[in-house]
Length: 249
Image 1 (cartoon, rainbow, N blue to C red):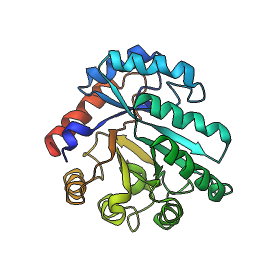
Image 2: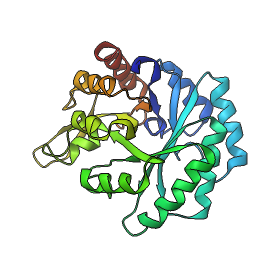
Image 3: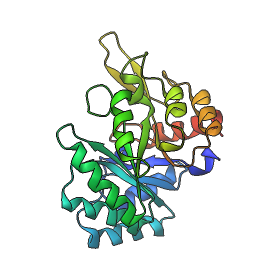
Image 4: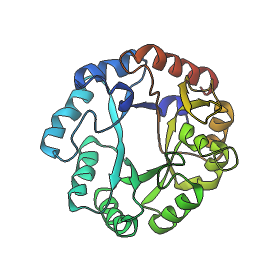
């Protein structure tokens, strides 16, 4: 696997900009050609309109590799999200489940995954959201695999604490059920508050994480995510790309 060839960027990084041609150009400006598209830039419940959005990115030389992060509760309207992913040629959706609906939602999600040929990766989002803890993630994946696997957001993984939040160990823990990566990095203050930094310059051991991905044969989707500098994200994201290429390849 070549991470260099595979990783893109999460469109949430460009959430201040609502115009998709402009976002597509910014993806190219930072030196990438892949994107995970989020709800800030598309309404996944309007598949007919989504075709034009796909064309906008395709014409700019940017491929949509995933849609997310979506909250799945088992609503029949969630079929639209899978239809949009299929229309984009995306093989993955990143998602959250909710504690009060996950059992029914997982069953319905499995059927949609099979119908559209799109895998679902449960996004770990720290200690304050259902699915952030590894024991909960283990249970969700046990219920939903192989249609449902894991998306490791490296920063949010670390946010749950140093004993359980170890991104390198999570790669080995989930192995072939690891479907997605959000390359993101945090530093933490004394009160536990987090701050975005260039990937690899915070608490994430980027070379070790990348080595673990290679060792396990990771073949899912991966994107960089940097949430700060909302109004001018290109400089920091360009540095993220440079760091990835220097430390990962």
